Length: 378
Image (cartoon, rainbow, N blue to C red; front, side):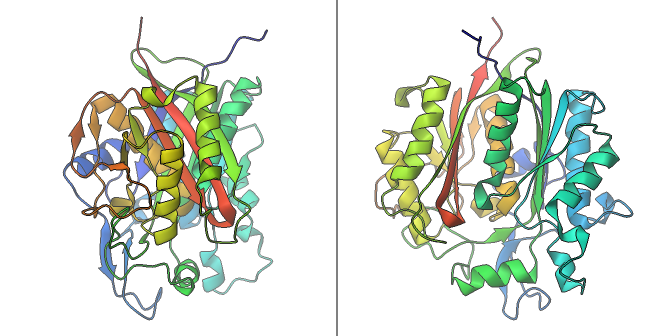
């Protein structure tokens, strides 16, 4: 019987309106800062809207690369330096997570057949700039892209294809993207309120993040990606399951892979978009998994919904919560308002968080779940 390969998160990075690295972001979260603001930006929307947007990111723009590609480069370079890994080695893989990529180029007047609109093109130019010799992979699976990218990297390592994989993801908010969510009447006219009885919908956000997954255990306390699974509702093009059974299936399979029971989960980092149906569905899935007493948070009140970067950003924050013993509260939550009662974390909560469940759901009924575990030295 083949011995199981452990996979560890050995480096992480976040570049977002709250901060230019993961440590700065976590410190901002611990002090209750939010990037969500009211924006009156006629280039993006004919009406004001709440979102977490960059004021300026010219410091990371690389000549010859788009802002989206520059964000990928910036976060990937940071984790490569942290982990000190050989990107030229064919045993090092590279994955890009995004939903929209360079879609902003359409608003600048480029033709629809411009090769720069291809996600594979962006992944290719970024990989070459970084020096990768392996073929890059693109994961674009709605709002679960970040988690699916990490699950894909985990499986590549377990299959023996790579020793380590760099996963980077980013999305920027354009008029095209914002108008799509506005057409669903899903955008709140105030800061979002995940899981709250008076929630009105989402805020969008911009950001990028990256991690390095490796089969080599780092020195000291490490975070292991112990399990991961994906499912689909097959319910509706935009609306989630009404029962939560399909997200529960992903949660259950991730827990089974990790070998952990409900009693072993210390915290849940939920998708928590603050839309009526998503939050209800997640509460049902949490209840089905027997996790209704486990503290749950959503980070959308700080970052907005960062689309293809959301799973990565929120996983990195969870990693820092586990390492620092501080669970970030759900900003905007005041009064329980989901179909099933769950334990929403509403204040900064100290504690021992050795095992974390991270979930995500997206358009098309897609769901993903991963299990993070603290691996302490013997």
